Image (cartoon, rainbow, N blue to C red; front, side, top):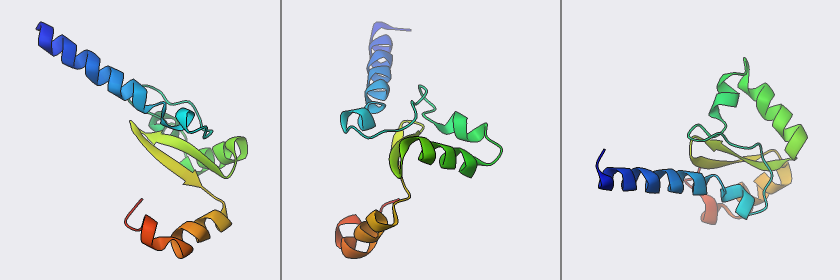
Length: 97
């Protein structure tokens, strides 16, 4: 591996690690992610992934964050919050997962 390839690899790893601080910087609870996989391994290793989501919801509350690989994803089970976002503020939040 050349010096420049090594440097790019270090930068890539640093960027990935900093992405996993997304929810911590915003003071949003959630399960700790694993490098590269985020929380996907925990979901894949659970026979029914919705049971893992339910367990995390009991543990972290109705709004928390998980990672699909390096990508942050909010989990929201607060009906009033969802109504506010999807109905009242639709123009600001359309076309999002």
